[in-house]
Length: 71
Image 1 (cartoon, helix red, strand yellow):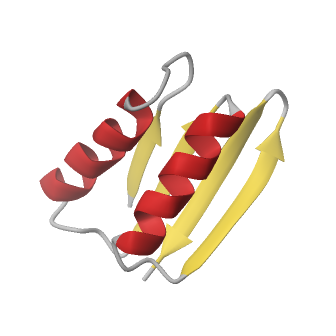
Image 2 (cartoon, one colour; image 1 turned 180 degrees about the horizontal axis):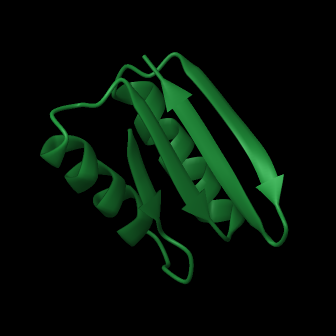
């Protein structure tokens, strides 16, 4: 499973990091992305949907949000 920590980064960096990690893991069936702002949450979630991930959950984790996705 790919786990990407994008806290402290502004868009488009979280999406680019997620894309690069998925390419490096050959499009892993499961991915977790940690974000810390609403723009990153929306953009990463939208990217994952467009990349074919069908089960996407966003769970608050303190001040951050953990996005879990699977194909």
